[in-house]
Length: 271
Image (cartoon, rainbow, N blue to C red; front, top):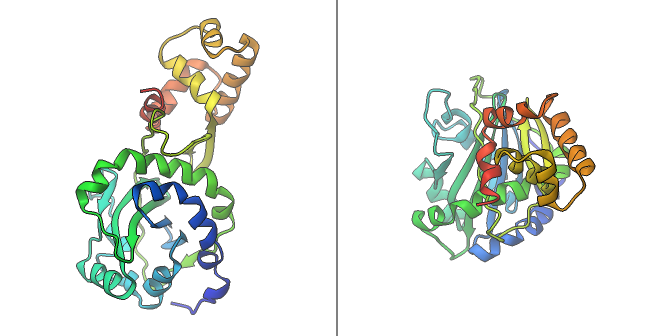
């Protein structure tokens, strides 16, 4: 792998920004987070609160190990749960713990036809949580992924791409969405980010509310009244939703959201 100038690499330059973004995780006593966007051409971007591990992982060529994420996620393998607990490789787990005092607890996965996102949560130093702890906080962690997308969008756009030229297997991914829960104030989500045709888009809170009223079968006038807005404003929100989903009829909205597996996430905002 080519030698990188890590001092000017985005994973290091943006580390302090990431540490600020993951502030809400302090409530869960989680102080390590990494976001990996892995593309089908075997390149990736990494945003992390602890870039030293990413540097070591690359320079030590651990990405070539059969158990690494790069060559272990396979189209025929079932990741329907949407997460992986700990490391799949005990060797890497031991190195991370002994060399860096890093314990990775869980990785949430978002699969897309052309890339795969990994949201990795864990602890540093002497803090350690078991699998049950992460599973008990799974809804909170899933909600945080939406929060992270909202607050890291500019950083992602300006991140350096790491290319792994030593590995040439083409990997395909299946789309998988995550859930959020409105009644849990663990994080404050102002925009619900999602992917449509590999393009990152978002719904505002008002747009999510409009969609939920559609799911309930409310007519436009009743939806506007419930939201305490005029019907004209409601129609404007609905038009914006249709533009984002590339559809012309309101009846298509629920169908498209169900197709991209976002419907459940929106319902969970209100349950």
